[in-house]
Length: 381
Image 1 (cartoon, rainbow, N blue to C red):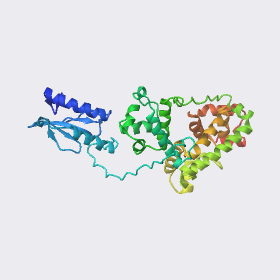
Image 2 (cartoon, rainbow, N blue to C red; image 1 turned 90 degrees about the vertical axis):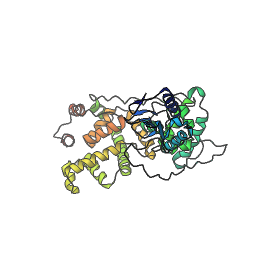
Image 3 (tube, rainbow, N blue to C red; image 1 turned 135 degrees about the vertical axis):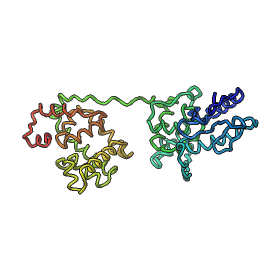
Image 4 (cartoon, rainbow, N blue to C red; image 1 turned 30 degrees about the vertical axis):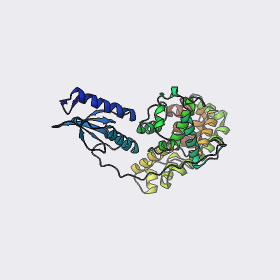
């Protein structure tokens, strides 16, 4: 082992390895980080818990928030290591990279924990603040019931946000959760209601109280060859679904978009009238064509993201109702009523796949829709 290009002796090497094992127990993500002039221990690419260097006095160690000392002085480094661990836990083990000034400490707002009477359980308790207290209470119960045999299980298959939150806490296995209370877990940066609910469901599955979490079901098959025939066979039903879809879309846009974004999206998608070009929308709003394109892309990205909590149930119900009939027929209905861009959004948002535009156009043409007809002029413009 070398520190700043100098070989260290066996005694110093054992001391470094002892410190590494001690810090590794507190933070499983901690590793050696060779930065040329120093040898550090911490998360690679971020701030270090401690680092070693060599000077005239021999090998010295510097813990975060402590003075540098020489190992030859037979110092007790455990209190300094504990101090560094506490500092990193308070900051979520996600400090800025070297070279940046540290952030000012923000006042942490404690999570309010509601006391629940013994005769009431999370399942029959009224929802408070969107159900946060229910999950918080339930999370504590599930953590207490985790068997010893399951504490070595690693987290996998969870959402990206939950994975990053657990990583910032230094949680790799289920047993690592016991270093924190449910309230402390909730204070982690970017850890919200959905992460808490997901973690609660995972622990219920670990304790055998719920089915194991499985991957999302495969997207439905879309038969573009018969899509127009499917549409004609159930035309009334598809138009009902389109009306429900339009209502959901307007409500979703009203929640997630500002007024100008809504104006651009409605005009571009042809909702409530014929679709307009980017240049035409820009002329109406007094902005450039490129600016209209930027607003439209940003707006559609927002609409593709997670919907408001109060709409999630309705969107799932609509998706189930739509998949009860051939999906291609609904896409044809959206294509005829609004146009290609809206159909592409529906295909991505609800059926998780790219729209095969050429195949859909061919299916409509084979169905007998001509470009000279009123509907054809709208579709083939």
